[in-house]
Image 1 (tube, helix red, strand yellow):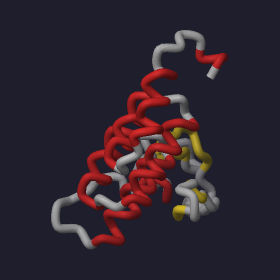
Image 2 (cartoon, one colour):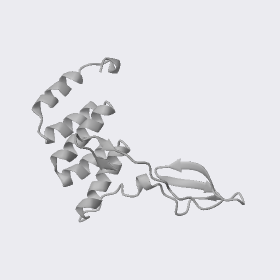
Image 3 (tube, one colour):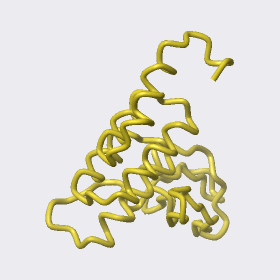
Image 4 (cartoon, rainbow, N blue to C red):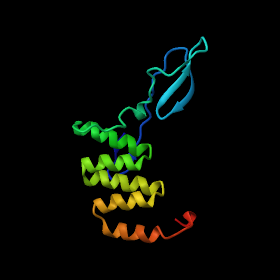
Length: 138
C-alpha cells in the first residue's frame, strides 16, 4: 500500500500464506478460518496481510502509523483512518482520506478530511453536494 502523487491509494496484491492442505472456509475481519485435511475447522494463526496493521498503538513509529492509516483507508474504515490521520497530520494524508471518501461517496468523511487540509472550496462544494438526495446524480 502506498499513496500516489495526487493522493490516490495504490494497492498491490499481497499473498497470504495458508498451511499446506488447508481449505479456506470463511474470512471474518481479516481472520482466516480453514478446514484441515482431516475435516477439523481451524482458526489459529491465519490472518490476512491486509489486516495486520489496523490498530494504532500510541508511541508507534511513523512508518507503522502510516501503514495503519493506509490499511484502514484501503478497507474503507474512514473513522479509524481519521483517528490515525490526526496523529500523522500531513496534507498528503488528509488529501488521500478525502479522495478515498469521495470515491466511496461518503460525503461527511470527505468534508471532515478537506476541512483539515484546509480546502474551503472543496468543503463548500461538498456541502452543496450533500443536499442532493439522489446519489445517481453525483
